[in-house]
Each structure stands twice: as structure tokens, then as C-alpha cells.
Image 1 (cartoon, helix red, strand yellow):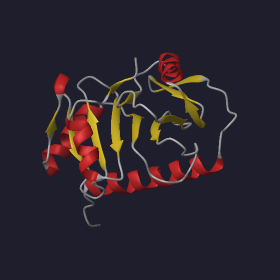
Image 2: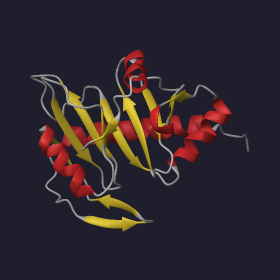
Image 3: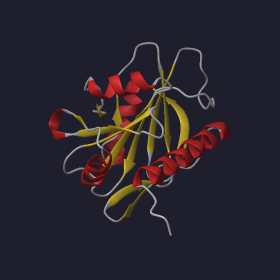
Length: 185
């Protein structure tokens, strides 16, 4: 059996996640309540969203979920769209004024993925493929070569990987390099 490149596997998983995200966005708001359960020590929440949130709403959600939820900070004039999948992924999408929540068009999105040993896993990818972007607090990032609209990052000691997606690959990279990616507080 031919050896499959780890990067190709990540690209396929990201493509599947993006398609699933679009499908979730098309079906509208879910009425599933937020409820905590534990899976391998990582908090998982029942699926919810997409729903429009204020900055304060995002802060309340992040405090209630019990783990870091990342974003790129407040952006004037934007609507924050929050979606959480049943496997614990949290999507914060930035919608320009007038764009309805749940629309299937791509916009700046920051995804927090539960991922045991995320930093070690991303370090292994960087060692194989190169292209490391060094971040503050010891973090690292890498542009997805198969899908350059996405940049993946992780920080030491964290069980969460972060993805920054933007329809413009240079903007996705610039956002990550600028240090704007941070937990919602």
C-alpha cells in the first residue's frame, strides 16, 4: 500500500470539516441545548448554532464551555457567528454587516479543535513539511499547503489546535503572524 502523506490526510479532513460546516450553516439554528460531557479528559458540547453573538455573548459562551475558544478579537461592524459541533469544535465566523447568519459563503473563521497533544502533532507536521511560523508564547503555525486559505496553530501544553481560515490566503497568514489569535476572555 502506498504511503499516504500526513499533509494529504489533514487536507482531506479539513475539506470534510469545511463541507460539514457549510451543511450545518445551511440548516439554520439548532435547538440542541449546551450540555457538557467528557471524552478523554476534553470537554465536548452538544452541537449548537450557527447563531449570532455579541462580544459579551462570546465571552459568556467561552466561560461556560470550560476550555479555550479562540478568535481574532473584536471587529467593529461585524456579526460574530458561533457554531459548535457535537464533537466539540467551535467555529467563530466574522460576518460583514448585512450578511445573514448561516449563509454558505466563506468569511474569516477561527476554529478551535479539541486535539490531544496538539502542539506535538503540529510540530511533527512541521518537521516533515517545513514552513513553520513561530508565534508568541512558544506557539507555532503552518500554512496548509493543500489549502492555503487555512493556517493551523497550536501552543505548548494545549489540547486544542486552532485554524484561521480566510478566503484570502495572504490575509489568513497575516492575521496569524500579527498575533491577533487569542482565547476569548
